[in-house]
Image (cartoon, rainbow, N blue to C red; front, side):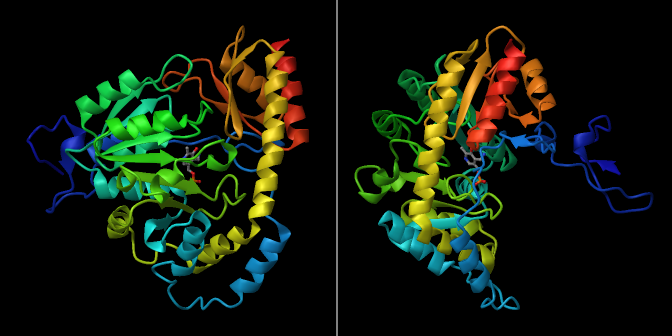
Length: 379
Ligand code: PMP
């Protein structure tokens, strides 16, 4: 082992060197050692309300069509590298050209592709906390600097703060999640437009929960108005499409943005069965919308029950609700729920979310279990 800079006390500077003596793997990139992973507990519980998945399986007819289709795949051959049929189907569903659609293995990989293409050393992205942790996390993994602005106390965007942050940071990408995870609200349309106007680079609107919300930024791209070539809307099959196990996400943007993502995508990164699964899912829009409507109704029911408990809550346009117990430590409440076999997300150590927990809307029976356990814990 040899130290590149001669300072043997800095393990991060140590790399494997040729020559005699025992060899060890090189030290990991020093900027990565400061990052902690983003993981939600995968505990075996009866009621799993911690990762915003759909509690419903996809339609049986989808599964049948998929099973039939799988039999026709040439598994000895690489998949369609351009995922043409899937992109065409997505393009048709949004009224855009297939050249405006980029698909990847979950929307996290879409975000990673954007950051590989536009981020990197010497470049900065802007975001507004509290927000989806992975925006900053993936940025840092790609060596991109992160300038985090703050939201207001009730988790809205403050446009003065937005102007200040983007003027200082000159970000290549400004991230919004709408609805915002884990706080729940969708950004009002005038706010999205104001951010697009203020931000110099690409505005990425992460709409992982888009179909639960009253508005979307998709038409900013599809109608081709001012700034349309600087907006990318990211969506996923993991939530409303009930397909978290498939790992499929996509973006809709100008063709140049799609080309940029294609530059960094690995060859054949979308396997044949995933392309088929996604394309077939789009034939079941009515079923998806019915599931969304059921979950919206359940969300309303949970929200009104929470209003009668000693917790602070915020309005949600997504399939989860953030809440803060008023008189008891969040961690203690989380543990009580776990003891009742109900798993929620502990956000209490995330920046700006002290004392907060997040519950995903589940089946009516699961939501009842959650509310009963929470009532008991707060008694
Ligand atoms: N964006 C947001 C805002 C999310 O909450 C999530 C899931 N937690 C994702 C993206 C990633 O979803 P996936 O990679 O499963 O598509």
